[in-house]
Image (cartoon, rainbow, N blue to C red; front, side, top):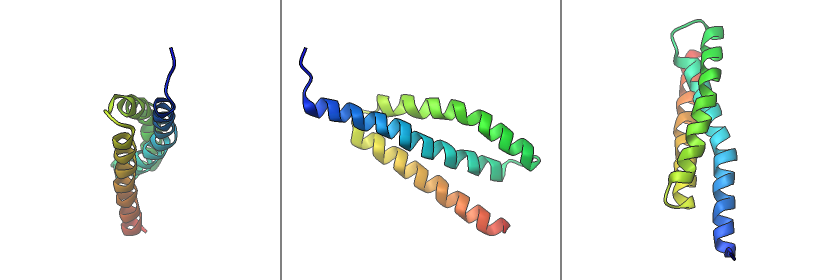
Length: 95
């Protein structure tokens, strides 16, 4: 079975989106949850970190379920940008 180069690049792009983009999104969500949870900071960070493992798995699954690699990248980058902006605004308010 011969796989085309475009198919291989599509799979490689999804792997990169899942690994790199998923990590960035998960990190941003972890920071956001740590900032907004109304519990002690140590508990909020620990809880958000534990939840991040599940979130990372969900993002990886989602990346490979989307119809195109472009949509996967757009979703991951867009969500990361929105969550990062929210974190930036919350840190500016609390500082």
